[in-house]
Length: 559
Image (cartoon, rainbow, N blue to C red):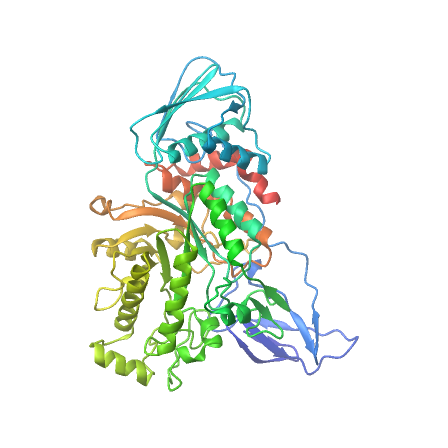
């Protein structure tokens, strides 16, 4: 990025740029034109400067910008009534019956139904009423259920608490459209992993916003919350083992260790206490959602290396730069401090999060990383490694063993499979994000895979190519229709290895919590449909369902 009009760039890091304005005079108009360089091309409104301010001596003066609340709600055409039931995701089988139901609310003291009732009350949704619900225990798969709705009764069959919970969620969604329809619903999820990711390192979200997201996930039968709380810009979990890490990176901006790299604000950020983390985990558990923590290594580590420079080789003369424009943003596996810090983090997170899987990150390591480090070169010689991918694979396998030693299963992004040693190993779960190809390759290599292709389920991508839209564009413009225009299992021989579908939301373009909702909605409907339904909906059907389903979830956009 450069500036024209009496100014010149004097420095910066990543997307944060400092421009000197020597000709600036009080009470005189001054025009600065920002020019994007280095191959970047602004795609839409989101690429304009965010949060500019003047630094004059020791004072900071925020500059006014045109009113802009970020992403605007997408317009969905009314294409008429959907095929089947008016819910997302659609059940496996719906058999309508004759007659008219008078059921406009249900009465059930089952603890699972009480949880769903509390969810309904939090968001002003219709649920409770006079009709008693009957239960039958049945030999059904995990999370599966069967509902019979007659004119004056509702009977549910399920084999576990998950089945009862999702039956209640189905009834909750149906009740937003009037009396329950008479008929029989038979339902079970296609995948055991039905996820949504949230990046809280680039933008710090209020804990209530996270709980609201968990509520939305529950309404759509999503059951894995991937919490990305560490990245280049911050480590926002208040761990006892590394207090200086979160204390020095929880806030960014003027006077802090790092500037506000994306928002450009004078000061921004925050951190999550262990009590807050526990409250979020408890909220998720009540909704049958597991919380997957991610620590992010070896790259995306500017925050780590600024706090602990001993995690880098001081003799490293490599010039590698990340796609975000950060130099030297990877920790070095040849440095003892790397293992001291990462091992301590893994051990404490293992005690904090009850879910039996821990995500180690491992994406976007810049090409040539460690090749300028004498210590890394010596480690490679000692271990018989030839290149960056080999050393990364060696490091991830060693970290995975630490995770296993702490009673957890490791997970990582698709790059974790790289390296002459076969990658991370240790029965790790991998997430394919650049596309489906790497996920299919990992599945063929024996890894379990969650499909999260950016071209379909990266919900921080702009909806359209319209310059008035909002969001990233490096992978694709992702419409609601795009979220269902793919097959998670294109090779039936790999069906046993492809265990789920997950939506992803990165927060580079988020400066306020409320901006998340029109980005997630309505496209998260497509994520839910692909994760639950055996046969994904057509583009028209998902549009129809999303249009109608705002009766249940559209209020999130007004929060």
